[in-house]
View 1 (cartoon, helix red, strand yellow):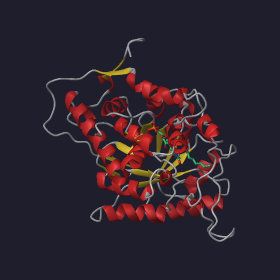
View 2: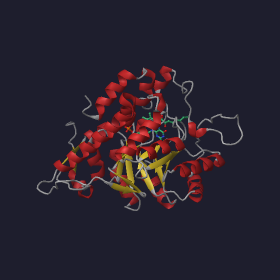
View 3: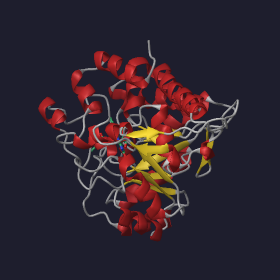
View 4: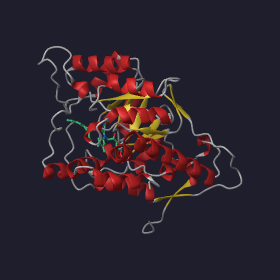
Length: 361
Ligand SMILES: Cc1cc2nc3c(=O)[nH]c(=O)nc-3n(C[C@H](O)[C@H](O)[C@H](O)COP(=O)(O)O)c2cc1C
Ligand SMILES: CCCCCCC(=O)C(=O)O
């Protein structure tokens, strides 16, 4: 029985090839940050208000023009067909049905046009909420063409991942010899549009030479809202404001890039303070419970993302699994709001969160 999102991980573990399980579960190097993300939430306590609730709670949000049924979105995760044959198609249908925003990974194993078509087909009466995650490529012509593809497919915001000047090193992947996608699976958004072998697919380039000038370049080449994913230093948050960025997704890539960075929830108050309410700050990393969502929102996040829980849902039970994961998070969020005496997300304020005294959890 799936009572919470952790139950999905257990089933996924038994269903998946251990090499692919490790790819998803793992983090960089000693996995210090991977563990810190969940521990960061566990170290925080909730201090509820009483006698001020409401029969029905409002969970819906509007973010960068996208309406969503809850402030929990699907963070971009690569290679969904590694864990389920329907891959991103199943994920997109589940996200659309749940009314949740899905950030399609640039490294998806289904082309963004097909992902968008699957989402639209799942909810014919409304526009599904899709954003696109981008690794800026040094080949700007290719980057521009990809941004155009994502925009024409119906993605309404760009989430630019900036924490990957080089790829993080997972020792699990190294030990397992996992270096490439298996035969038949490719990053379908990386197909050559012009030149190259017909039908060939490029490698994603992680470039340490990317700079704020590239962000400026992107700003000039798209009218979509731009969010930066992976800004961790408050000075970079202030720079993002100066470069016309529309939002931040505070993320340490689920502990998969630089190990030993702080948990995202520990950094949240400082980052919210740095942007001073001028742009929304979203957060991902270690969100596993409705209580985690409430803690992050109370500390100033506009929404949170989940990465692994969605992949576990997909691996365990395909589209139905992802739907159930999203449903569980929504139910837990609603239940937590009720127990905190919050009638809506607006009632979540920093005074509801306390740091658990050291050594007590
Ligand atoms: C299997 C896997 C693949 C990921 N692929 C991407 C990706 O393609 N682009 C990206 O920006 N982040 C990627 N991430 C990071 C997630 O977007 C997100 O930051 C992280 O998973 C959040 O932490 P959580 O898994 O604890 O929820 C990936 C994470 C996982 C676990
Ligand atoms: C060179 C391929 C890059 C895929 C990126 C996937 C990712 O971000 C991850 O954390 O895994």
